[in-house]
Length: 443
Image (cartoon, rainbow, N blue to C red; front, side):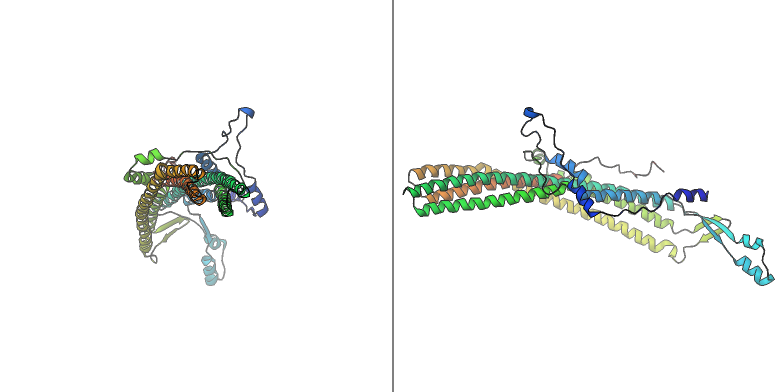
């Protein structure tokens, strides 16, 4: 039997697995966003555009950091298998009979030599194996929750990064439009100065406005690059990868408007995977307390003889029990503190969402229309000679600022909406793992 076991385990030999940096980089560079098949003239211009949900689904499969958490599952599954194994048998030989016979009689026989051999089977204490398997099972369950928590956090980041990239592109488009407008204004005054209908100061003011718009365009281009690189990093794509983003509406407004803060907190209590992970960790600590209690009893080994291992020097498991209990109590306090922290996070996210919503409403209803009207009136007044170029440029700048603030407010509201949905358990709501012990059916 032991020979067969040795032959079986002999198949699990060591195989080196060296890392090759060049190949790793090559593999990372080979990751591509799957493009949709085209259908010629029938293809809609926006049919290949992608929304945040699709990006998040792609990121869950390709993000390298998430792969690290998944690899932990394999470790915990192996530890669960180890926890259910029985202690190995012990084979030994005691030479005391041979030595004593040699000293007393001056000779020894094969009887004394054979009597020195022994075979012992250590037996688990009462409840020890079940507690060990239980603790390992809940550690595996905790790791599953940690994976869900990592996916939950990655999904939130992808949604926020999507809004940043989409908003940065909208700001760039506006910056290009405003630069073209400022360029036409400068050309008008340059020609007017050459014809003697405008002063050099007026032309220089128009040039200064054009240069300011060009600077804003450069900043907008840089923001697009940074936003795209951040999004690609979350997706596991090369920095230069390009994805057409879909124009989504502000997310989750109906759900958020309908839910009070207290309801959001209650939902988070049962939906957030980080809280589920802590509950699984607490259950593992419960099993570890049982394991420590089981070690209060002596351990028997049976075979060609009997051995009784007395836990005298370990004070019959007393210190180990106190340690395991203290760890369990600490986890209980950690869970309470995390619930308190989650409540604080949701309240802060809710307040920030309300502020972003109110700011956008004010800009849309009053600030932006007022700036548009003022600029239209100023152009008419300027042509009639009733206002100066300086006043016209000041009103033009006010409109630029209003439009920029409108776009920034829209971006911020979308980000705050995704964040609040995530914090309260709405954004990512995977199938909640069963709260029963994951190994009950196998035992």
